Length: 112
Image (spheres, rainbow, N blue to C red):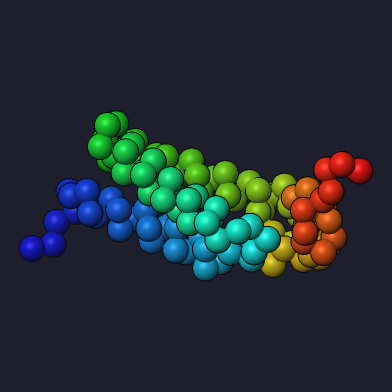
């Protein structure tokens, strides 16, 4: 009944990783529109399941591990090195400036 060699298991692994990412790091994406966050989730699931389909499960899990390493580098090393807490995104104004936004979280005026 419970099998782990199906595409649905791969989808559940990808969506579980995404859910945990949104739960713990969603505050880093609050300034983005919802449609972009949804598109990102759909693309990540498609890429992970596609990797499982065409390259195999070992490569899918290697891809997930590579993504996790990238998240760790950004949140545990790059952000703290620039004075932003990698877990809470505080101070917000400094985080927003790093993301190319004005200190209130709105996109910067590109004209001036």
